[in-house]
Image 1: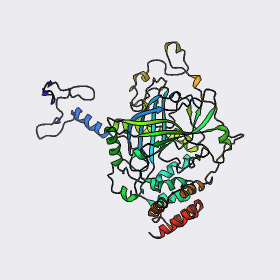
Image 2: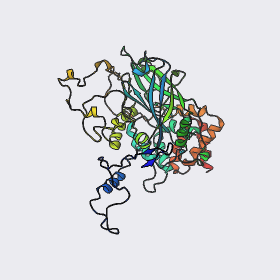
Image 3: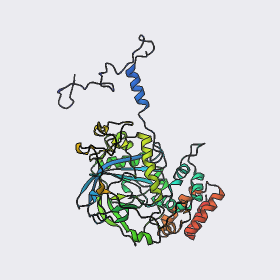
Image 4: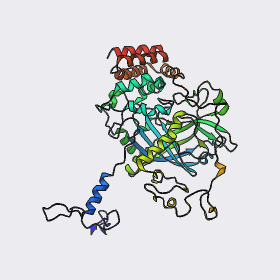
Length: 491
């Protein structure tokens, strides 16, 4: 019996057990045939330890593998009841618990926090009517407008399949053949391509989502999370000197020290009539909505104030999905978003099992009642394991079996009049003007950083890829193209 190091009082140790709860007599030696003999086949406790150890890691995320996360609170400062029935957006002062995971995108768990890469910015809102996942990035646009190209894009950003080394040729070869990437790649190669820390990034839904209110009126919405710490970034040279885990360390230590990072939450709102007539496709993920036409409306504050207790159980098993929607918040015709509605939840079922939403970090804080049964980890939530009917409809509503809630039915989503199902080519829907607008508002120093960062990689690509990219930069802004040509020539 040991003594408490603080009081000196005797402490009875907790009994070590195997996974079935049986006490373990010895955790230091295996059973052997004699003191120098082989291990015998009845070492079931040894086998249990080794078998569990072999399975301690789950498959790495295909994208967003390297991440950091924390818990916090969203406080509503402006009611959105005119636009949405979402229960957590009704009354000023309402507080909703959140879990926010930051990440890099292309690299694996072994990559650096300081890669030139977009940063994932995904927020799980634990509302009283289920979890809403705002699955976004630190940029307001993306490389693609159609999800069918997403696997190809990610392949081009990963390591070379033969050498397992970074592959600038593949990166620029994809961009050369997909000019829709120009706006996002301009942001990526700019001074904002490498954030100083996760506390110093903005977050965006990027996608257009929807609201609907009690009158059945639908509005289109984009979410913006503006860092209250200010945007701070690193040059490539500065980033090379940083420890690979620096952003993770910064987030943990700032929260442990009571320096809680926060973001001002804004929305842009567009009604259906405006969307029909607007000169920009409001569902094109490669474009922003100009603030002059759709100004930011401040609606709340988000603060992170509690670190995770176990990185694997919480951060690594966290599963965000754009399909995690709640009454009052819906999807839109955004093609990339439509693809993500199936892609993300499918990835989670593969990676952590059919019942991933029962894992504590993912579990809703409100009651959950459905007729889904069985699968890996069934029974984490005993109420969902169920002993009643496992089908619907049934005749058991009087004894508490789940039933539909027609009052939260989403209103019909408008489609184009007389729309015909077909494959419509949207690859050339103005890939250049917003990239050019962004270039023209940059300072001289920002323009120089941009073209130097582009030249570092593009100079390693083949001549045909270089020429195709030069044309894209020219179409965005002639000065943009001229500067990149000179920078590549100087390498």
